[in-house]
Structure formats: C-alpha cells, structure tokens
Amino acid sequence: MTVSEHEWAEARTRFIANGIAVDPADDAVRGPLSRQFAELATALLHAETVAEVLEQVVHATARLIPSVDVVSITLRSPEGRFHTPVETDPIAVTLDELQYSYREGPCHDAAEPTGPAVSHCPNLRLDTRWPKWGPAAAGLGVGAVLAVALVPNPNPPQLSGALNVYSHEPYGLDGTDQDQVLLLATHASLAVARTNAVTQSQLREEHLRQAIDSRDVIGQAKGIIMSRRGVSADEAFDILRRTSQQLNVKLARLAETLTARHGELDGVDPR
Image (cartoon, rainbow, N blue to C red; front, side, top):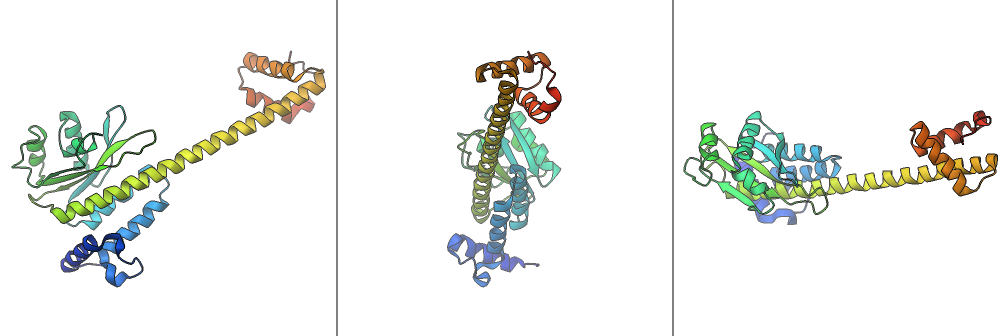
C-alpha cells in the first residue's frame, strides 16, 4: 500500500498523540504508521534470535521514518568493544566504525553505559561536539544524525548499544522523528531482552536435561558393574572413572556404551 506524505504526516501526529492508547483493532483510527508499529511488535515477539530482532528493527526504522536515509545498530560489549551487527547500507558501517576509531560521535556516545539516552545533531556541518568524526561524516554526505540508546539487558552478557539513524539533509531529522526512534529503540530493547531470556532459559533446560540423562545412564552402568563384578556402588563408579581416564572417553559416553553393549562385554574386565 502506497501512503501519501499527507497521510504519513497525519498518522505521525495521531500516533505520537495517542501512542498505545489507540485501540489496536480500529485501523481507521490508528492510521498507516500505527498499523506498521503494531506489525513490528508482532514480528519482534516471534523473532527467535537477537540477530533477527535487530534486522527487524533497522529495516522497520527505514520503512517507518521517510526522512531517514541510513540506519544501523551499534552494540558495545561489556569489555568496551564496539561493532555494527546490522545496517541498511554499507556506508553505515563506515560511519559507525569511524566513531569507534575516534572514540567520539553520537552512536559511540549513546552506546556507552553512562552516555546520553539521546544524541541528536540537526546539522552536522555546524556542530563542533565531535571534532574528528563530524567533518569526516559530513564529507561522506551526512547532514543530520540521531542515536538513541538501547536499554541494557540486566542479565549477562550486559550489552549496551544504540539505534542510529542518518539523514543526508541538514535538519532532516525533527522532533517527531526522535519520538519514533525512541519508541523503536524501546521495542528493540524489550525484544532483545525477551529473546535473550528465552535463549538462556532454553540453554538452562538443555543443560539440566543433559545432566539428568548423564546421571541416569551412569547409574545404569554402575548397576551393571555391581551385578557383574559383585562390587559396591562406590567401587563401580571408581571402575568407570578410571576406565574413562585410561581410554580418554567422557564418563557419560563410556556409561552409554556399557549400558547399550554390556552383553558384548561380559568377557572384558574393566579393572
């Protein structure tokens, strides 16, 4: 569906004024912008990985805000390393990496854990906050830039980051654009936190399942040795442990082999 500039302007005003209080079932009230935000929220809820979340956000930002020319996301590791995992144009990587190299710039600043929540430069040609990066970015055709911090995940790994938007035109990003980018960054932060939580939960469940399975099969192997060799549980486990070390095979794997093939091993003395 093609949306006219007039419809976009009305939708932006209505969306910012009403926010999530607008009835999500009433498309006539919501307008095209709110519908696309709702679609993004649904897509983010179904994303399975952090990478998928970030891809959804950068492309939604480029689609939802017509004045934006280039979008990227900056992530900062707990050790202080910066990188750009997703972007809508290769020039974004150049613009971001210059900031990481110079240790200055709106994306770098917003991604710092103690940095500003919003770093907005309406006209890069007139701004002196970033003496190295500013002229370099202006030389690459950037007129305005806006970076909004992502809310750090409270659980490890505690990544921080920023959603970055660039416009070729000076004063190309206004206050309404800033409101929308703030909302998009919030969507991204919540979705990343949810995806990380799901991933960590799945990992914990898998580790627990593996631990239980290993314990069960080791118990079965001990029972076989106790029955065949007439030894105690502690002695049976010691036989398994020593054999595991001698053969350089994991204890659980050795136990699996013994329980699966113990009929073939009657003549073998593991001691």
